[in-house]
Image 1 (cartoon, one colour):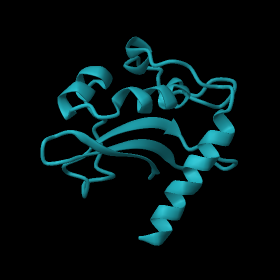
Image 2 (cartoon, one colour; image 1 turned 90 degrees about the vertical axis):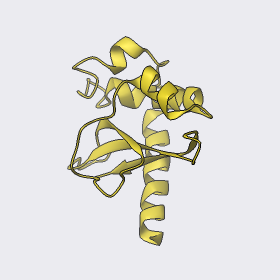
Image 3 (tube, one colour; image 1 turned 180 degrees about the horizontal axis):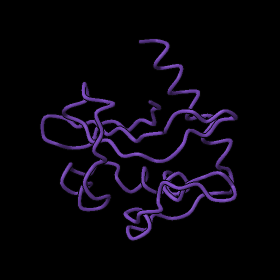
Image 4 (cartoon, one colour; image 1 turned 60 degrees about the vertical axis):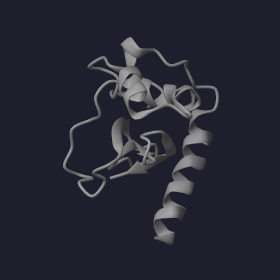
Length: 122
């Protein structure tokens, strides 16, 4: 479990360093577009560029409010053990050798309010 925490922390730090000056405000139309997880010339996807804005805007929201904002979660079998959380793909991992994908994992309390958001890789 500690290695997972260190991995998540490393990803957050790396994401911050790589995304400095490359952030854009959340835009629902872009987030939901077919190209939102494709990398551009700077090797970041639109979703990766928007993640800071998304994290600010979803703080304290309910599950339903987040789904209205971000759309339905990404369908995947990769994280079947996260059955109560929402998960959204962000794009290829931001690293020198990008072999995995980055995901936004959202956890909720018993009242369906967001209590934790994490960036994870598969």
